[in-house]
Length: 196
Image (cartoon, rainbow, N blue to C red):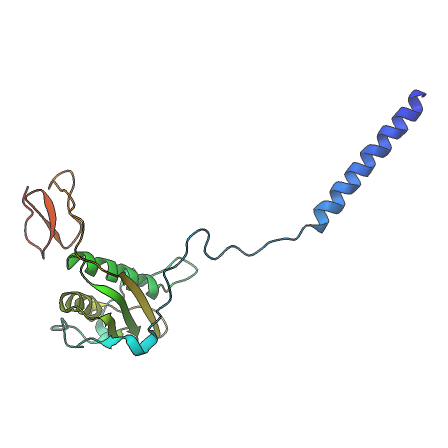
C-alpha cells in the first residue's frame, strides 16, 4: 500500500475517532443536581407525628427570660451565607448540648416550634425528662432566630442510660461546656471551677 493511502487511512480513522468522541460528549446526560444526602442519611422521621409529643411546661427554666423583641439574635440559628436561617441546626445543637449536660439519659424525640417573632413558642418531647426540659427551656428563653415560623425536631435516641465517661485534665483535656472535671472524669455540672 502506498504511503499516501496510509496517510489518508490514518486521517480517516482519526477523524472518525474525533467525531465519535464529540458525539459521545454531546450525548452524555448532565447531572447538575447534587445528591442531597451525599453519603449522609438523616435520622428516621418522627413516626409519632405530633400525636406522640407531649408539651413541656412552658414555665420550666424561663425565670428571668426577656420578651422576644428585646432578645439578641442567637448565632446558633445562623446558616451558611446563602441560607441565613438554620433553625433545625439550632434544635440539633441545643438537643445535643442539653443531652450531654443532663447525663445522656433522655430518649425519644425533642421538638421546638418557632413563632412569628423568631422566638420559641412550644417545646415538646415524646418521652419527657425534667432535667432535659429545664435545660432546653433555659436555652429557648434566651434564643431568637431570624427565621420564618417552623418546627424543628431532634432524635435523642433510645435506651440511653448515661454518657460514656470522658477522661479529662483541666489543662490538656478540658471538659465540654456544662461539665466539670471531677477526679479525672467529665461529669455533668453547672459552672464552677474544674478539679484536676
